[in-house]
Length: 275
Ligand SMILES: Nc1ncnc2c1ncn2[C@@H]1O[C@H](COP(=O)(O)OP(=O)(O)O)[C@@H](O)[C@H]1O
Ligand SMILES: [Mg+2]
Image 1 (tube, protein in one colour):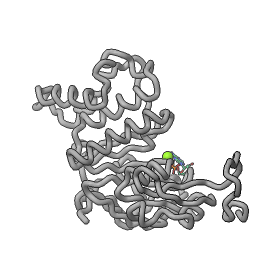
Image 2: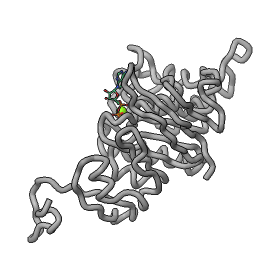
Image 3: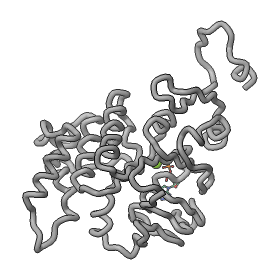
């Protein structure tokens, strides 16, 4: 496995409260990796520390073997782009202006806006289908359109590694699939490393090559969805009883929660009645 990012004895947290203590995790290059775990377990914190937005208390994050804390912001931004959870754009900022911001790491006083910058911005808007929304203020768009505009900004940054924190939150099913398909294509066609947090374990299983399940400040398990997603993992990580079936279309693990609901089959599964 070629590693793109590695945490090396990483300890991170807020104030005196450590969320992760001595965390060692390797994220493969050229694959889609997804962090899963219950609310508040620290997924966003971990993603932000990988992106150098949070300084570790101890240990380091290595990007292609280099400590991100020893790299300049510009150097990091040329290698990885991050879409945070629920980003907020300045009032009135247009889609075009937002996407152009993705090019800032590539600029300097010597190297002003270039033809290449224009091309990357146009390509990013096209790929995410926001080119027709270019003059619309981002804060006036629907949830799905807004999310696409932010992804376009991250794409315009043209990095090999793209980090996204719950990019499908607030989107309806159609738009969730649209966003995940787009990320899948970016991985398949350009070999980009995609690292994201998803709360839907079934979608995570369908799109991820590699799932990293987080629990109690540690990696509970990591591997292909087929090899790690089972009812023991779901019970331990999410505290939920379920049956893990096979997705009838994709063959990937599909988690069916127990709990209450209308049951329209004659006999309730023994396991459910016993739960
Ligand atoms: N800026 C912050 N300051 C203090 N505590 C925080 C901050 N951000 C998150 N936390 C706390 O850290 C824990 C992990 O949060 P987070 O990384 O957002 O979890 P997740 O993304 O897995 O839901 C939570 O208990 C949360 O309240
Ligand atoms: Mg989060």
